[in-house]
Image (cartoon, rainbow, N blue to C red):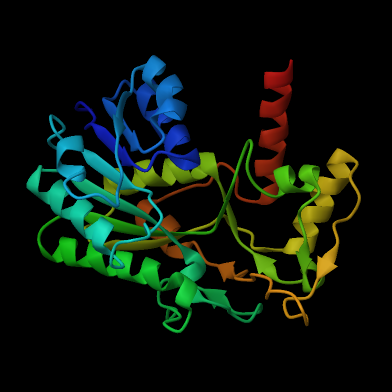
Length: 294
């Protein structure tokens, strides 16, 4: 196998940090870019190049890609305020094309589907919700990626389910006591363990065609209540409170739970999940927490 291309991460947060560590372990050149560079210093100590980057400012992405010809670029920046919707992604993709990147992977959201009735499965052919104002910037981002694909850049859009892993997810919020069940927790949620997401990104980089679009979630969409009660039993915590999605005198509770299908991802990329359900994923978190505390 030939030498792996450089990896450049625009917006290196929770997922980017895990991704960068995995890439560094492969011996790759890794460049991590974010506004908060101080928190990226541990990655610098591991060998990553740390670059300050503010996506809301002009002429940021080109310099960040210097000396990284042929790189895989992973874009994981929420739509910045103060710019027209999709503009930051447009600039990043343009810079990637001009600097000779080999692949541009956009980490998006399955929230673009809006509210879907629980019995219905959602796949890549399901219409997006153009009337969901909160998700409109994400749809503009996706359009910018598709335009870049038309210009010759190899791109992929990943519509992610809820990301969880060590230090993030339902388990953390239950421990803090600020997790609520919406409408009794009967709505389905689809999640993805962060390490499976990292593996998906590598699979997309290696095998996906240009202008690819994949839903990324594990094999088992699950009612919110089932996941919460399973974790509560493991941790000896009380059952969380239930709140209605609609209640007089309080903001509407966010509910974009849905049953996401990963069939296309598994079929086209021959992908196998290490954590196909929340049970394996949560047990892995427990094992990692035990290792750290020990």
